[in-house]
Length: 241
Image 1 (cartoon, rainbow, N blue to C red):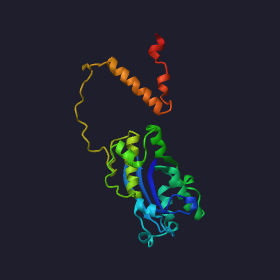
Image 2 (cartoon, one colour; image 1 turned 90 degrees about the horizontal axis):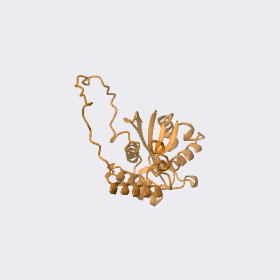
Image 3 (cartoon, rainbow, N blue to C red; image 1 turned 90 degrees about the vertical axis):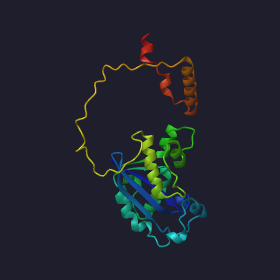
Image 4 (spheres, rainbow, N blue to C red; image 1 turned 30 degrees about the vertical axis):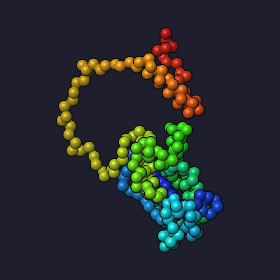
């Protein structure tokens, strides 16, 4: 399935109060590889940008004054998103703004046009309970370089989100562009080694290490609100005794 990593920048925080989208950035991934396709658009919101929003993304009224309206570019957005899984950090915020823009055009919600919407913030809160799970915090935790992020930018943030998502889902350590490469031409004459006679040492944990691990599990259980359910399961070997 196509996956689209999406981010928006807006005039303010309240779509229902009339705030509008001023920038959208989308990056496409297929088979956990970036395809090189992306969509990046600025919009004239036909209203002023709140000063606090300008401090976040740096997009001024003057810069946006000659940009197309969302209505002019909506077909491009919908075509790019159609049928894909759309991954957004704090999805209700961005989908709320997108749906208000679409409502003005008499269009159905974005959820009805895509395969599904995945909220990476909700995923991160499940994985890292009790911790900060902003995109910046996740970049630091998962060692994703965000040193170029002086301002929030929709395309830059979508790219960072793609890297963070891959690391959260343990698929690979970094992203590469899929340039249509295949396995043809790769060497198949590499000799296979017989490892059956190699005896690997088994190192048992010391008593102090076991106690330290148990304390760590108790802290994890407390932080997750009792979600370490595997600790209550009876090990098959223990039940047989």
